[in-house]
Image (cartoon, rainbow, N blue to C red; front, side, top):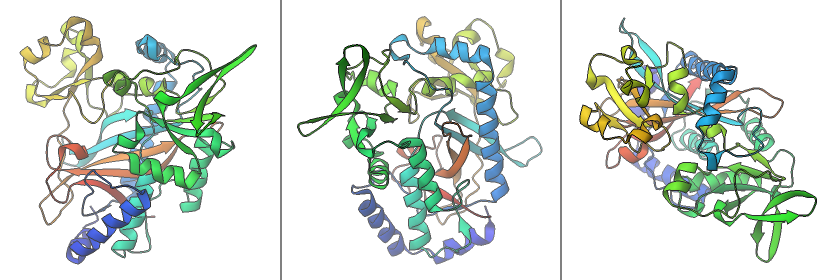
Length: 408
């Protein structure tokens, strides 16, 4: 969006430099990056990114300070996934924004989604570094929003994830992590912090008479007690894949969570009908809408609606311009797990050789214990279709994962 930088990059782009960058990402990730990486970074005015970061933080505090909302969101967590020992606040947050025209024709931030869950802190840092190196970007361009430099960025991640423990006793846990498309991020994070990557299905409870049980993982023949879990496992995937865990989320273990599982539910799509902010599109729970509640909150034009499940990821289950038949097809007992929401019309603000492209900007935050919510960096997804996720923009050029650069 900084036009002179945009035009300069497009003019200087060389396919061989892009290919070299991709090979470098595979090398630093120790695996192949299987999702699309866009041919370009993005150049944003710093005040725009600051505005998004401030909005995401304000919305988060709005929810956490609303006691009635927090009670409702706790009750809405499926009983089997209502984990014990909830932390006072989330350790991680992502806030996704699109750029749309307001009533006066000006570009304005619009919230797509907010989620108290980690994102690809390691890979996004590596991707931004790769662009700076491969395309010799202006040395005055930055991509870190809060930390002063790379060392401060990783020191803060270490503080939140490892928290002073022996790294051998800290694990990054996900469902069959070797098959996840985020494996590049897992490898970069584990290499930088010295922690272990484990399959959550292989965590073993260890009973201790008179004491709280522990969770452990095996390293060869050794059973190693876990002090802290960097949680990347999503309950939706555990249910969908019918993963059998050896422990019960509801039981209290002598372990710390870096990203307590309950926060995935508290700050999520479930929160959208409760948020009040000019950047938040109107939303109403489907069961409430079926009872006639909140119908005046949605646009009169049905083409500006979307129907989305509360608990899904990567855009699964979203229906654009839902018909009465599609809405009625949701079983009565499941309607409380769906939203009807005002659809955002993304403005294609990124000029590329393949044509104007839309950008969705995700602000990545951490919230250390006894600290405050801090924006770390921004992840950008470029696309031209209805859906912005990398899975929905395959077989196109100048779309996919990107980054946000700015002048301080």
